[in-house]
Length: 208
Image 1 (tube, rainbow, N blue to C red):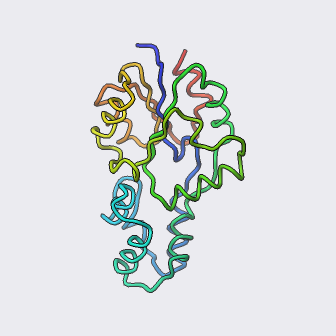
Image 2: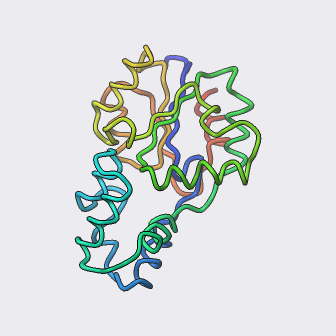
């Protein structure tokens, strides 16, 4: 196997804990008991994929959300429930990146949206401190800025070409199987981070 020179990290449940059930519970409290039928990790209504691709702004999202569910919720109510899944950073995993940034060129590729981004960037300042979160990586890639999202194989090719990376020398780390399979399809080395696994342990094995 070719030696890894570059690592592309996912964010959610890799460097940062998320819990979809928290958002489902929050929307149920607001009167939407079936939100899981509209938004999951791999299958969602068009509105949520549009948000992740940056095709709608914050206020378009709120208005389309109210129309989709025929409910007169406030912007703050929607935002609070939408962000409820955001738990917090994995400090030991962040420390691993800081400690190994001289050994590997690191990148981030996250399916996210402006509302979540605004929340976790401030959360990093409060929980971790020091240099800004984005400075951990040579370049962070966010789906809502790219106009692309995982698991589209073309999105991985876009990053490789943009950064001039060889796929075989690049490791992609993600908790979602369709994403790692898509990455593998364009030649990336992969690490599927399953529940209970953390990068500071698994990468010791992967990168020996």
